[in-house]
Image (tube, rainbow, N blue to C red; front, side):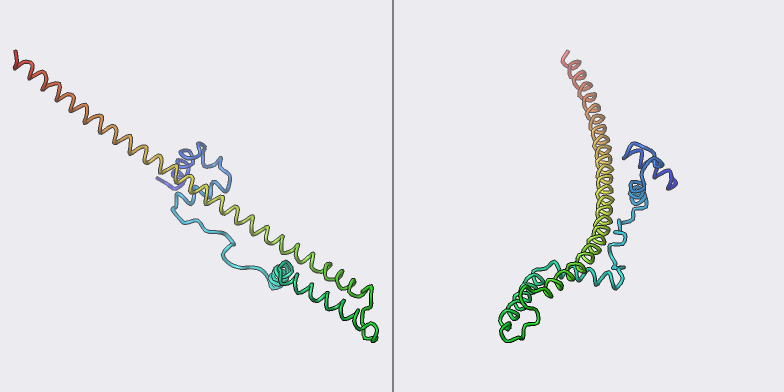
Length: 186
């Protein structure tokens, strides 16, 4: 049987439609089953990000951590504490109301927000690929289970037929023996 015929037969047996009517993901699953190749996660096994993308992901990871929040809180307290404590000595570089600190915080937020969004966009693409791969693996597993159920049902049917034939033979033998015994008694 050719691969095309095997694919079409498998598609009709498991999904009740021809191979040509399947969507690309279903076709890839049928192809994997026919060729008996293991499923592979496309693009999830190696890191193909450029340097800037890896740096943005690291910045986003650090910017969303407790270490950043605590460290940044300590830096803000030190900044404000120094400027309040040294105001009378004329050593304060950003006296109250901390206009320079406000500028620094605004700049940090303006730079950090797009970096985090770029990282989240890349992560959503990776998550989408992983979800598609999970769907393919789950669909393949479901179809393989259906095939196993069909094989078990066929085996069970063959076994039942063999038992029925054997039981029919026994009944026939017993009928002959009963008839022979009744003739002997007469």
